Image 1 (cartoon, helix red, strand yellow):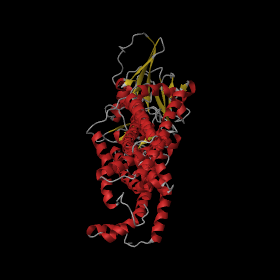
Image 2: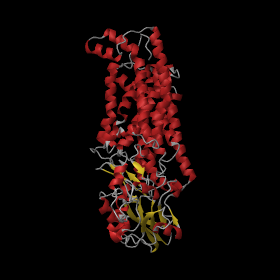
Image 3: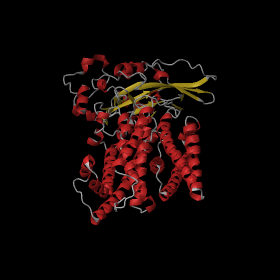
Length: 245
Length: 385
């Protein structure tokens, strides 16, 4: 089944060439199943660049047909007043962007946006708890769900510390961000990366020292969400504030 | 919704069915332990209730998976858990523990009742005779030697069954306690609390049913057995409640990051269901009542009424405990910044009506079982009960 998933992702389309995608191609991608081991997909979110426009959320929803009320990605807004009180919100996952907060009595002294998505953890709790192995890590480091095998128990939804999973009825199976596996295996950026007007999101091969994601990670300081839980996430945040969980 | 929750957390994934599931398995494990207290530990006061507790455990066991199947998004794939178990998951062991326990209880009942079946086969006629013949697998004879062998097998099965029953329910507690993502669930104490609360609910349901059935049939109760069960209930409920309180105390005392949100959970969304009803009314209440019953010399009738009331209160307490764990844990946002809301549906697929039906069916089944495996009949033929 997993082989079928990879096939569906386009890996076995031997005749596929980079040039076929023209300028949309942003990074190298595995051309064959044996190439998978050379890849380890990761993600960088530069919170200092995000403007909270919600383009990523809309693009993800359209690309992946995410059911209403559920989110594979969303954007959170953090606002701090002079007393260090924090106001956090993400109305409808920011799919309609944000409106100015009318509840604030005090001036906002600091604010920023934080896009969220599946962290594709190296030691993912969701993979660990899946009782049938429907959630698995692909050889190129993406946590995926075999929806033809998922029993819909919801254990993974409980186990994900980041609130990235959901179980919608129908289809009665768990779902979450796939890192647009069907796109990155054709050399295309994920829908959210492609839609971001500020390059706040970067997806790439962590094993490639020349990749954009590696370059950024070599140059910038970054942090992951909830490192104490030992999940070893592969979504790295630049400019992450301690208030972000 | 209060404060900030992650957008996907607006939907509560585990609802009434997942409250009911640990509740029913708790009854299964608890009732079995009571039966084993006689068969293995020789608490002879419980002899008259040992058969009843064993068959009750089996009746609940038959329906323990029903809430789970109703909850699954794809129940037709349920057996994937056993066909291709993913052993890093705590849940993958469920099918094996559940089936293993089922086999043990079934065999124990069979050996327990074998002598009785022989007697009934000899005295019955028609379809009943055929049923007993099938139940006896064609072996319609018995003597002192076979009775002795049966008794030894029952004792062995009961001994094996104790750790398996505790595992069956301890494992349910472990399912919750091992979810490090959830601040309300994640504690190594969870499975121990689940085990003790299981025994409490098991003893309580037996007391409730025992008194109710005898009242219904207008039969005299075995006062020794009832008093012994009341003492057991008192003892186990003290351990269960103290463990629950110690867990809360350690959370409050540690003052870690999660206490900030859990404090609001307890004083906010769970104030009535947890603090008022579970702790004050349904824990402290029966503790005081049972303390009086066990320690003071009350008129028998009054004592029995108080034991009956305590059993109902403790059955409610354990149900509330399951609710407050399962639902309460999902109300807390993993952002630690707010709470989501949950209101059970009435007529939904996983609503209250379906839950009530699933819960009542084992009791109705038990009534039918009584016709094949009479629970309280005085056995003068030396069977193993």
